[in-house]
Length: 594
Ligand code: FEO
Ligand code: CA
Ligand code: CA
Ligand code: CA
Image 1 (cartoon, rainbow, N blue to C red):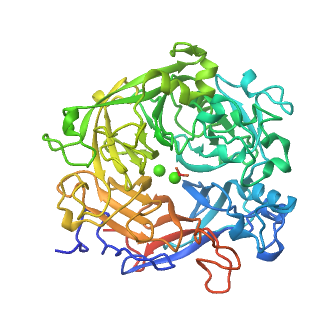
Image 2 (tube, rainbow, N blue to C red):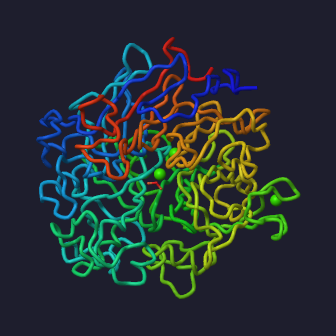
Image 3 (tube, protein in one colour):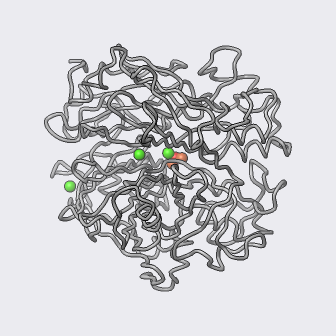
């Protein structure tokens, strides 16, 4: 039997078949619109986008490049409007600039790239009570934050000598945020933004800690160090310590300074998604997206105040500065000899087990022998190494289920698993040379997110369902869509998990999938859309009447350029490829998947 429009509530659509079309393909009966493109003006005074007349000044008032994480927040008192917050992870200069010479970028090109990084806040408007969204240019809440905007460092490592530079002797004021990948939305109305692969922006690393964070010893590909010495670690060795944090932004206060929260540790932060304890303290789950790196949580010692009063908002902006940072250690319950690296299920028929949260630091107190608390926060990866945390297959986005509290972690892939000198397969990461990734489901003991122990099991082991190493929570494999490289995850209001992919290894373009997490249809995975050529699926936000996705790096294929594009999405032949946000909705105005 084929997948049909039957399915769990919220997932009743005909799945989109895997394909390689240069477009966003959606199920029958669904429509779409481009909400906003790279370069569209959002601030007062910003000019219309002109691909051959780009300037840094224009870009600083326009929507940035390579949209990744998206959040949609309510906007009181303005009918049909919401606040869209987007990450702009990085730039593809060869797809942005005609005649780009990677050996000698110009100052203007580099400054455009600085302005195209960072975050955007832009109010969006529903059209005719449909799922269609369009931007409200020049709304007073609209905002751009870039690689040169001011950020405040807060929490226990703020002001540390490890964070001081010649330009900032206080160690509390950083210019810019870089490589914002996924993120999270807090129950108190702010957004969180992970600074992920910040290593690529820094030249001439030399310390062991630079090496542990992947910072190279020579010049960088982007060559920003030629234009600002802070990107040259031989001249400004602490500057890289000021990136790799979780940023918290208050999108409702356009004059606020966003904060880098040191209590949440420093690593290649993919995302950060909170959940509240029963007494109202936030617990933030976070992955470090690197082969063989770790999964973390932060437990605040302070309770959220309800409401939107000035006092409540001010208090809630301190929640992520005090608490305890933990790293996860997972143990399988099947005999080690049953985990052979092929993905064959052990005799208890599940990849599952228990885990402990190992505390790393609380405020100014370190729990890691031989490291100060400041060192734990700034060099968190080394703290995880010392306490023997579990080496995972690239922890990407994470999402606690708003219904059950179970936490879903996308482990995107790890082609080095089991290689000589590298960690072998274990029950949580059961395949050697893992090309397709898996999704792990974590249940805190007693459903207490502040606790120090949990149970876990693999929810999905991705790949072609015909591949015997795949697993869809026991759902019949002939009735699921193939999936590869899960990255971003989100929940809908029905309790279904939505999964976007990056780097499909099955010969099809990336896409977005929905899957039930409970009931008889648990594991019934269905593909909702596919991406244009070269693009990764990001964002996703699932609302009753729309699905919002970020089409990131369309056209990013080896050797492609403005002159020789691999994609001309979204505007067609002869037009420059533009990363954009897309809304998908039902043409008959009904709710998604019901
Ligand atoms: Fe930027 Fe781990 O994806
Ligand atoms: Ca088992
Ligand atoms: Ca990602
Ligand atoms: Ca998410």
